[in-house]
Length: 459
Image 1 (tube, rainbow, N blue to C red):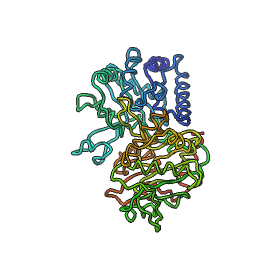
Image 2 (image 1 turned 60 degrees about the horizontal axis):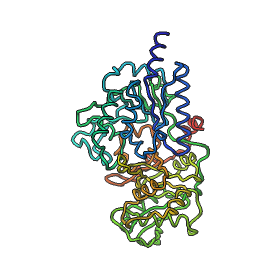
Image 3 (image 1 turned 135 degrees about the vertical axis):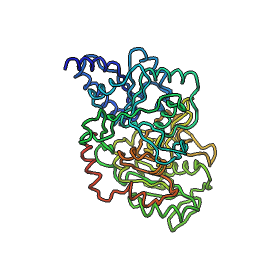
Image 4 (image 1 turned 120 degrees about the horizontal axis):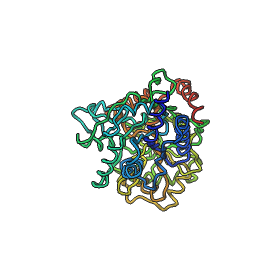
């Protein structure tokens, strides 16, 4: 035992853990709990604890979550005395002894990019249709299983980040973009698959050999919020009244108590409300700001949460109510699938609109009080809101359970460990069938079995 123990002690000091944490209070609590667990496990193995960093607290740079801007800092701080940087999501559970043993099988003096590989079945819009000839050829890591970079790779990438400015456009699917940057058109290493990095639930028999496992699928922090606490705003326009609105009526409308359809044309049969903003082909900034104002007015019920969706968004209101139990509506919460724009050059994060944008009442109050407005009616509403939030210093909270695209646009193994809340777009799919397969909870008992099991771990 002693020789194995000595190797473990020694190797633990060479690992730097980075928890990909977020700054809203629920996520800080999650990350603190995870950090405490890592340090407790380490303490039972060695006197000297490993370094455990919380990503959201490393700097004031909004772009840190996109990882690449952080590499110079990681290289500078740990390039001399460490061997590995291990990145974790806040729901990743680690078996420290096993992880150290797995990392010890790789030569730490070489460049390694380790993880659990995902691949695309077909070329997808969220990856800019990369590898269209053969989409499954390119492997990228499932962040939920943890992923690791050896220090020689970190040092080289950090120099590259310093010397050549990072691209300054969109950050959409970070795990894919990080893998592309590291691979560098074949000049850098590709992802090495490590079977011990897993997304199995901790208590599954398959998890026996895993160094990492996944906590609960849908966080639950007590009772689901009431239906009466959520106001739902659907953005539509005349040309989609007959095509898209019926899908919502067939699928999820019944789960919302307070719901209004906003259009450029008042149609009493739906009914839709004309907010006096002409329909625009592109962004819907004017319409969205009119919705924010209406939400705070006496024209609609006073609710804690506002959900804004497109008319081709498919969403599970019951699952959203469970997730919202983790957030405090008296805080300025803005929740959904986070994208970035210009993150390497002081840009901003935003919630991509198609997957659904959730705002606490406090967030809407602050947004409107700030005097922030659209520079044009057809500006992209989600991006303008992101700029406003960034100017106000309010965080955008990411949940991977919201999806800007269709189920087929995501890697199968990635969706396999999720209880998704939303998908978006009706292109070449039957949206009702997609809703029924991915988002419908027929047997109310089924998801809650898993939820009840996990509720204990979340509280």
